[in-house]
Length: 511
Image (cartoon, rainbow, N blue to C red):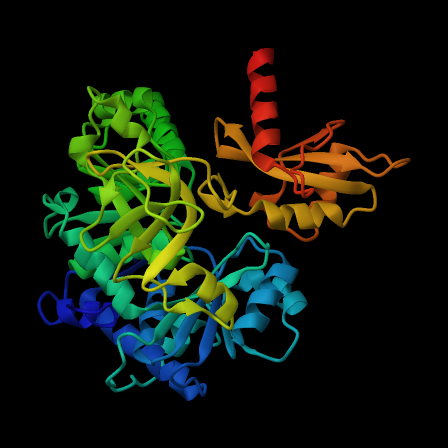
C-alpha cells in the first residue's frame, strides 16, 4: 500500500507534469508538489521540528495546507489542524493541550492567535506576500532527504469535542489515512473512476472528511481543485471552468447549486458523481438532482475516530424505487465490522436499535493525554461510537437518536454540553438544555431551552451575544426558548430527547 507521504513522488515518477492541485492562481504539478513537500519537511527541520513534535495549522482552505500536511508527515512530526472558526479560548485550549511548538497560520488569524497563545511560539504566515511568507520560504529552503518512518506512529491530532464539552485530540497515523483510501478502492462506488478525474474540494481541510477527499484524488494521481468560497455561484463557476467530474458537498449545497444552474440556464456536463455526508438525501431532492444533474450519488457516514468513513451508500442504492434505503447510511466499507450492542455491551439482533460498535484498520490510536477517554472508547479492538442505530437484514445501517446528543449544523459537529456550559455562565441562567431542531438550510439548528433564576430576566438576543464571547459561530444557539420547565430523570438529569420532542411537536402543531 502506498502511504499518503508517498502519493506525490509516486505520481511524480510516472506523470510529473500532470496537474495535482489548483487553488485560485496557484497550480501544482505532481513533480512540483513532491518538491514542495520535501522543502516543507526541510523548513520544519530547520525550525527544530523533530519526529513527534506537534505543529498547529489554522487557516482557510488553500493549496498550502496539503503541502504542510505531507511535509509534516515526511518530517515525522504531527499536524494539529485547528478549526479557524474557533474563539480565542477554544484555540488556546487546543494549542496548550497539544503542546504545539510551531504554528502555521493565515495572516487574518494573527490577532486571534495573539489573544490565544499563552507562550511564545513561532508563527509561519501562509499568505504573507513577502519573504516572510510560507511560499517564499519554501522556494528558499533545501529539501529534507527522505527518511524511513514508522507508518503507524501518530501523524495527525484532530480535535473533536465530547459529551463533557472538552475537545479531545484524536491520534491518527498515516497508515490509517492510507488504508481508508484502499477501502474506498474496494467498493463499487469508485469502480468508474478514471485517470482524468478532476475533483472539487469545498469541505474544510481541517476536517477529516475534507482532508480525505483531497487525498482520494492524490492517491489516484488525479487533479484536485480547492476552494475557500462556498457561494453556490462560485462553486458552479469552478465546475464549469475546470470541468469538474467529482465533488463532495452536503445536500443543502447540492440544492443551492442546482438553483444557481436553473437561474443561469446552464448544466455541468462533465459531472459524474456527487459525494455527500452529514445528512441524508431527501427523495424529492434526489429525484430532482438525478433529472437535472444526471450524475451518480454516494453517501458516507463516519467519524474522526475512524479516520473518516465506515459506511457507504453507493450509487446503486440511491434508488427512487426503494426510498427506504435513502434513510440509511449504507453498508460497511471493506474491512469494517459493525455490531449493534446494548448498554451492557451485549450483541443485539437485526432490527434492534442500540449503540454502534465497530472495528476497522483505520481506527484511532487513542486520545492524546486522555487514557481515561481511550479506555472508555476502545474495548478489545472495538470502538464504541456513542451513536445509536440498527442494522437491517441486508446489512444497511440506519441511524437513530445520537447517544452522544451531537448536533450536526451545516456539516459541523456541535456538542450540547459545551453550549450548555457557556449558557450557564450567564448570571440569569439557572439551567438549560441544548438540542438540535430541524432547519431547512443547516440540517439542524442549535436550540436551547432555558430556565431562569428567580428574579432574573434576559432576552434571547442578550444570551446569544453572551455566547459569542466563548463559542465559535456555528455553535451559537439560533433559537432560545424560555418559560418551560426542563424534564428530568429521577436522578435529576435533564432529558434532552424529551425537550426536543416537545418543541418539534409544538412546531408541527403551529404549522
